[in-house]
Length: 339
Length: 285
Image 1: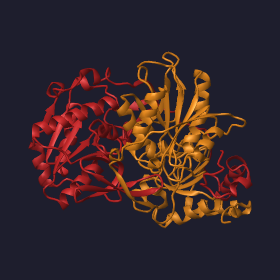
Image 2: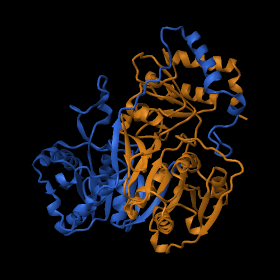
Image 3: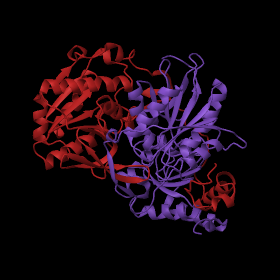
């Protein structure tokens, strides 16, 4: 069972249409660095009804080898079918490491897979490295609502599996990269899959895609009421951003849970995060502190959000935001939105 | 029809503070609570019981003896019978070992009670570990279909219809029974304990199962030795960023500086920003 040889695999999550999710392609970036250090191959795994686009994207993002299962049975993800297919590939090729995006799908799949393979899984990692003593991957992840970071290894079981948060690593395209492709077939008996998706409901009012947003403007309890979010929306519109919210604002019923950023909401890593009237509880920071640039506007100078802010304004947001929108428009930002 | 709800006692992570001198977590005096996601799972079971009075709700927790407190809490809210799995041998178990112990415990409860479970409900994740692993790992051990991130559910003939949250929105999933469902935060608040139930819960008997009470258990698969993962170290993240904080500035001036900061540092090129946000194609970051 114990072996540190073997390849490093990245599972490339796909939509029903076969489009690769960002997170799988992002993971090929740290995957490349780890493989170079470990001297193993970087393998992308695609399981889909129509894998063409994901296979091409995996090659363009540095995979040495793409292993692919193409079958109509895999059009829509189910825990049972994908666990069976991945287990089959793993028992055949015996990779040492498997990285999976910590999306809703990845967090559904990875634990079932680890239980089937009887191996160790580390969830929701934000840093990856190599433990010099064992040569195993060292997985770093937040715990206790972001109050604590834990470094975890899986010394004796293979493959070692980890899920990694979307947005922590950036995609890196590679030019002139050649990758071999292996096409496998694995048919699952229909009775293996017991759950059935009856209906897919996109968010009713608006699509809240916080995870892939590059700019997020979030509001918290400091807004005072639901109407306060009008101001947040206005600033978000001005910057071409998406509206987020703290747990306090969601619990108060001012905005739907789909907008919630933090431990019990979405974990985000945008280029720009603007926190307005948010104090910065640990559980909120856990969901957004990996944003590239953080702006905070809060009237409490002691608010913890200022500790993670690159730029902060202590003051009344109801005065500051309209002034900010005015300044931004003067600088030509208004043209961003719309067309 | 029997539902088992797996619950965990967790420290209230909202209340955890950092000791600025030693830079470690101050865990003393932090209250222990029922993991909120497990509360949503219990509420889902209680709603099924509201509709179908023949439903019996069992709760199961694994932890030190004091974890009995959350089981009593569950009895005060909606549960009919509670079990605690507790043994020093189980200390240090990671998620894989924990799911193994829990699945052994679940099978033992079925033998002891002479019942089977139509549904096993769990919280999506516990707020201390945040792994979201134990539910699906139990489902795999017991060969049950799984639905994660459930919001609400209803019985439809002999199947369970679950509305679940996804990254894109929601979907409606139908699963045959028996099944395992994990629950996330719904749009409503779970019910509170009633005074009458709370009084009864104080006297209720909670059966404790130790390693010796689980005859089929393989002791090499529990505790630290039975856990494939190891915690190498933990540390308190340094969040200090030393950013520019403008207090006592006229807001006209402060917001003008912020607009310049955004233009120069955070939003470097106007042409990039002209694209609609959130598009996946061509996003090379």
